[in-house]
Length: 347
Ligand code: NAD
Ligand code: ZN
Image 1 (cartoon, rainbow, N blue to C red):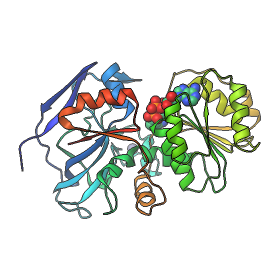
Image 2 (cartoon, helix red, strand yellow; image 1 turned 90 degrees about the horizontal axis):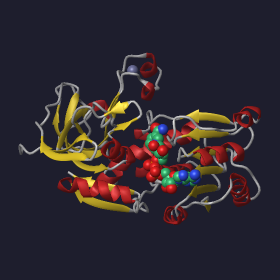
Image 3 (cartoon, rainbow, N blue to C red; image 1 turned 45 degrees about the horizontal axis):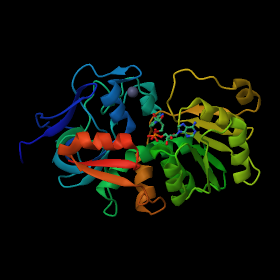
């Protein structure tokens, strides 16, 4: 094995360096992974441009990246379900596995969660990383390494659709056609939703959403909430959506979600924008429009793999760009341009 473990280390705002770090050795219940593909997420770029997200501040150098696939290169003594050479997707968060949330199956809410590339935990933009074996999922032969990396954001969408209780024949509104919005569109369709309408401010993103199967796209730019609401209901043949998956975090979009969702329906708050937002709360209360948060995902990796491997959900239409680990800075700049859904780095 080579001694090369080039890694993308963030020192602070606008200070991303490529440097060698020691190759980590797996503990008894861990595996070492030769990283193949890492997708770049908005949060990776945000740490690079701002140095923090909410309470998480980059205080010490941190390796970035968390949407990861690779090949098992060493196996800990107690690991039985993986062997050297297995292709895997890595679920990036390690919970304590002992607290009430963990024990009741909502480990994404674990207060001790250690999540890749969330300070101070190192991410995966390296040649080699180690990870708990039970958070590494074997990729079937018909899934690519890029599919493996995309399982991370796809899991956010699966968790969102689960929290929204998206069902067969449901009419769904997705607000925002970024990576998370379009993955919600694909997931809602894959689980049997009827018509899905998607909104955005960007014509290019809406055009892609249309290609990926949106029944209608609405550009909300310059329009009042009333106008957008009317256009959504018209697009759904004069019915309101039972579920709205809000993937922007923008105030007008959240307000549109509340006023447009059918009485008794559900809004899933995926987008994270301003900390405090002015919303018509009485409308949500009196029409019993439930607002449900989501935080990342829980128990979604096996479902994502099954949906992809069975062909029920197809990611081949997502626009992509590719860089080498040595080109990490260019890859981050490309992500900022937002001209493709996913930028990948090959390690
Ligand atoms: P993104 O920024 O690429 O996409 C957001 C899209 O929303 C953009 O295309 C933008 O043009 C559009 N938009 C902005 N204002 C709008 C408005 N008023 N109406 C309609 N569209 C509007 O981000 P992404 O990677 O797709 O992620 C979406 C959101 O989900 C982000 O806020 C992100 O932080 C959040 N997120 C949350 C979780 C979680 O666990 N809750 C996980 C992943 C991402
Ligand atoms: Zn826990």
